[in-house]
Length: 204
Image 1 (cartoon, rainbow, N blue to C red):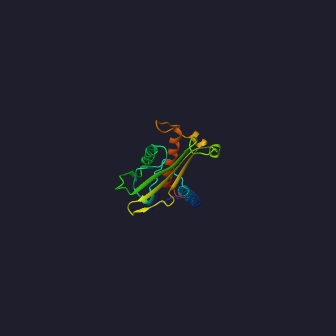
Image 2 (cartoon, rainbow, N blue to C red):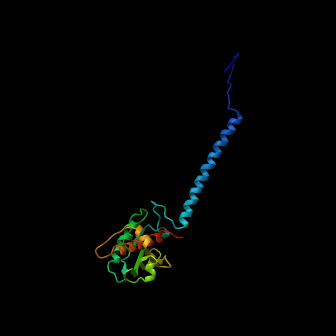
Image 3 (cartoon, rainbow, N blue to C red):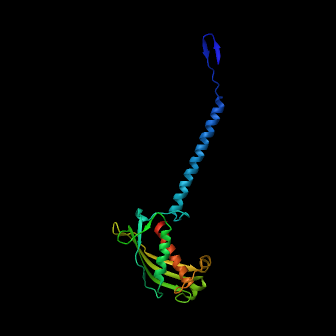
């Protein structure tokens, strides 16, 4: 501040022009980097979703933006009784782990899933020597129909699902046992339930 007679002058000292340009460049550069990182994350999520992957801990939504689903009584046409009960428990457990949906009665649910177990083979019944030697320990074949009750239309076109329990996969899965169902059979049921769950949310 300079006093000159009756007038007072204020002098402001600005940073150099080069310093201002440097600060602006740095700020713009950081903004671009942040934008590119954000854009890359979005692309990665879209890519994984398109390829049928579910990010662990995520809660994917049902087809047709449905909020509720009903599991109709499972039909068992195999030679082993009790498969339908264990499969219903496995599917219910998987669905209840997803907080984006609710299991509802068939008459009010948005979607209805119908399952018919057609054939089961194990190394003691049905599997050929060639299949056993190739590492297959059990197979489960079933027909699944997913219906949108709101529009009265089936969503799934190819409704046949097959689960194959191999020797390597059997060693990785939890070894469970039951009274009426063997541990190996329970494992192939668990695998079948996982395939149904994956099909509900993955469209490769």
